Image (tube, rainbow, N blue to C red; front, side):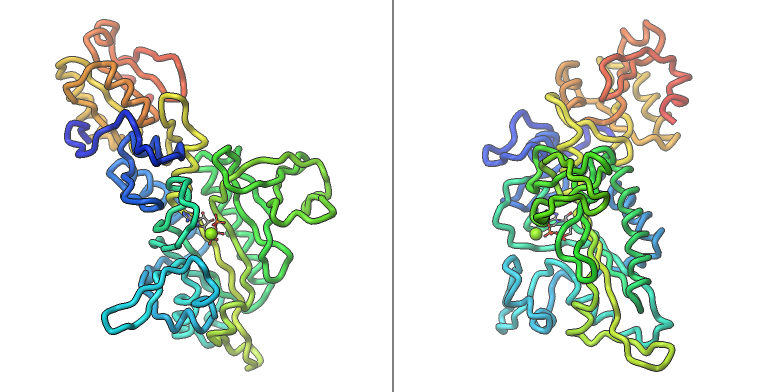
Length: 408
Ligand code: ATP
Ligand code: MG
């Protein structure tokens, strides 16, 4: 894409009321726009990152047998009264239409997916299965000071799995855990993300969160220095021991919950009477798990972890483009390289704007695309183009013929 055609522009300053670093950088670089606290528009650059994240997650969810669906945002009140959460969920947005019919804007989808499953399954032969979606959630979050980490409207991947037995759920839960590790590894968060024991499991004592260590985190976790697993401060018990390895050597850290997995047991299948006939013809209540990841929160977490004083530093798998091609002065060579990169399916943002070198370099650092390729009279005199990685200081002159090789 040509930068001269991009309808957004970079900004020197972020809005004064935006205190979080992730939103400041994302807004200044033209990835997102703030509509109001906790509500953001995804602009072309930001949406490209979100789509990369979405596809990484989709591949992994398909890999564990998830079937993609899309459930509505507008929910009938009745579904929420059946589980009791119409009255107990503080962050539920409630709306009324002109005939006084009450509805909820979905903050999560157990109330929809369980009655949906009820329509299709009746035998143990219909189990197990799992469905997932990428969908806008609405939550009346009180604190909305964390930029895209805590939206009032935000996109979540939520997967729900349905099983005949606890053993079958446990097996699936493990495969989901591994899929989550791969997702956070691909997003460049492997080193800082810890599997974290948290409260709230229905079978076992725990559910699991994936917590990424950064000073922007709202959670406090204790990272076991022996096995690298963590425990959420909210649940650490009197024994002060690692539930995994029994060590009590912990390091306290601030962290962001980028995802979680949860054994629901029969919590939602009971109120909707979701059951099947087992092999003996006996009625069995279906056992469930749920598995969430916030896409905007993941994008914001990547920014919190990967940036410097000049701007963002995107890991390649989630970068909006792979290459930032910059032409200095009028030169046709840059146009040729742009065409060549596109022909080879290398994603490239081409800074063809009539701006100073200083402005172009500053914008490239702010936007944070992994490879910067500069084409100038000077570089051509030296025999090619100047290539620099965003996360490295030194640049090198590369002959045109080797450029594709290097980038492929
Ligand atoms: P938190 O404790 O941070 O409020 P939660 O326990 O409410 O999170 P879940 O309901 O389990 O979160 O949602 C699943 C995932 O959705 C979370 O792990 C997180 O990645 C994401 N998520 C939750 N709330 C938000 C939000 N307000 N904005 C963006 N992402 C969110
Ligand atoms: Mg919450």
